[in-house]
Each structure stands twice: as C-alpha cells, then as structure tokens.
Length: 395
Length: 70
Image (tube, rainbow over all chains, first blue to last red; front, side, top):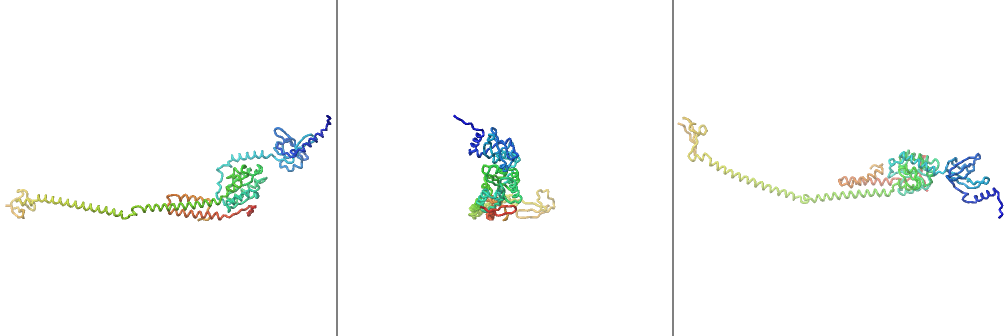
C-alpha cells in the first residue's frame, strides 16, 4: 500500500467540497440562542448559535444585514436561514447566514399569555360586561382588510341571510406594524360617529405573528370600551386571540360572525307569520268559546220555555189564594159559632128573662135599688117589669 | 302606528300579544282589539324589513362610497 500524504489545505478543501455538494447543508433553517455576538467594523456579524447541548459558529455578511428587523444580541432566541460551509483557513464549519428573525413563537406566546392573564384579572373578559348582540341590527360595521376572503365571506353570508342588509366596511390593515393602532381608530370611529349597530372585527387565519394586532393591549381596551357590541372573528376556529376574549361574542370564522350578526330574514318572516297565525287561532277559539257560552245560556229552561216558569208561579198563586179563602171561611164560621154560643149564654143570663118570671127592677134616679133601706118616704122610683115601666111613690 | 318603532321591540310586542290573546279571561272586545293591534304590528314589521335598503358601503377617510364586490 502506497499512501501519499495530502496537505491540510487539500483535506479542508475536500471537506468543503463535501459540505457544498450537500443539498441539505446548502439551505438550513436553524433555531438557537445567540451568544458571543460581535458586529465587526466591516459590518459583518459574527456569533455563535447554541442550544442546551451544542453550538455552531455563524457569520452574516454585511450585504445581508440591512434586511434584519432587529439588532442581534447575546441571549436572543433566533431562527437563521443560511448555508453550512467550511472556512478552510481555520478548518471550521459554520453557518453563512442569509436571513435571521427572532424566534417569535417563544416570546410572542409568552407575551400573549401574560397579557391574557393581566386583562382577565382586570375583568376585561367578564361575562357581566358583555353587551347583548342586537337581534335585528340595521347596519353591520365591518373592520377588516378591504380585499380578501374575509370581507367577501361576510358580504356573501350576510346578503344571503338578508338581501337588504346594510354593511359598512371600514378597511383596516390586519397585520404588520401600525395595524393595531388603525384597528383602534376604526373601533373608535364607529363608536363616535355611530356608524353601526354591531361591529364584526375579522381576519383570516395566520401565524401567531400575523394575528398579533388582535393580541395587542390597545385593541383589547378599545373593544372593551366600545359601546357598539363587537363580534370578534380572528383566524381559524382553533385560533384564539385576546380580541376573542374581550369581544362581546366570539365567532370561529368571519362567515360565522356574519351568521351571528345578520338575522336570517326568512326565519324572521316565518316568525311574524306564525304570530299572525296564532292570533287568528286565538281569536277563533275565543269566538267559539263565547258561542258555546251563549248556547249554554240559551239552553237554560228559562229561555227555552219562558212561560213554564210563569205558569208554575201562577199555579202557586192559585193554591195560595185558595188556601187563604179557605182559611178565612173557616175562621168566619168558627166566629159565628162562638157568637151564637155567647148569645145564647147571654140570653140565659139576661135580667129580662128573670123579669118574665115575676121579678122587677127598682130604680131611683136611674140607679138600681138593691136594698129597702136605700129608699125613704116620698122617693120617686121607677119599677121595671117585663112588659114595661111604672113610676111610683114611696108612702 | 308610529313609523319610527324599533324592530326588536316590535317583535317582543308581537310575542306579548300572542301570549295575551291566549288568556281565558280576556273579553271578546279585548280580544278583537289585541288581534287588530297584533295584525297591524306584524304588517309594520314586514314593511320595515322590506324598507331596509341593500347597501354595501366602504368608509374611506371621511367619505362613504359604494363598495364594489368582485
């Protein structure tokens, strides 16, 4: 075996070729924490990307740095996009970074949780504060992007449910810097100018960063302050934003929000018609009931045979009259009897009867004389016999 | 009937009248009155629904313009 040694340079070049020929290493997307970060005076940035168990050297050339949205610092969690290659001079492989962004998920999610907890404690999510969603809003205010699926879905669903609905769109940016402020302005304008009876705050699905304006405290507070009820429909069904919690109602999607806001007009007409029906039925029932009462009344004997009652009464009257007559007759007869008896009694006791038997009545000055001593010589007396009077003088 | 009545209130009233009409102690006169009131109200409600005008507008700065749907 005859082995020719190669130079270090040759070895490193060989390794570099291996790296460069690897498709995967040509385009890596790596996350980690920045450490040992140095921004060289030439404008290149040198740093190390590390996690708990490992590290790799990184370089970002000056030509890429203007696209950075932040200044890299030690301790930052970032994601870098670049190529892994070998720096032959040092025999070191490193990531040549083309782009880098902050690993938002971690920090954003933390911020989301923190704000959510804070607002919840303040009572911004409390059920008691939630306003009632009007059943028949005249104007639906929509705060969303002027173009795109969201406004289209809302218009489609709303007009399908109520062809006469009035939708007032106030276009606002729904992502990126400044979006939150514009959303706040929109909510305030709707309130100040009373532009709607209900507001739909909508946005399609997206990453947590895309949805971020709806997780901002100023938006949450504007929703809380709004006097117009707000339906929040941010992201997909599974996305929950702070807006959803503060809003008076949360809809899983913008289409669902339109369904919640706009009453289905055919349902409403159906309800009105069914009221009309129930009135008709109720009135018919009432009339029938009254008729029944009337018939029941007319069936009473007093109406059916009005003379019978009178006849009965006159019969009773006859009986009464008869009994009265009878009674009187009886009484008369008994009185008559009594009278004859008394008369015959009187007759037997009558002094006239006694006179016929030879007795007489002596009177002086119209007074009956009962004793001889009541008379004296010379008195004028009258003596009554059964057949008449004589006057006499006492001798 | 007042023209400027609130639709929600009207619907509530329609419901109230339905409930009152079903009461037994209502006189026939009162029933007829309620019936007429209810029918007038329901007519007004339907008119209100017809009256609403379809409008999709867009607010730009201080102007309100018709919104063009694609």
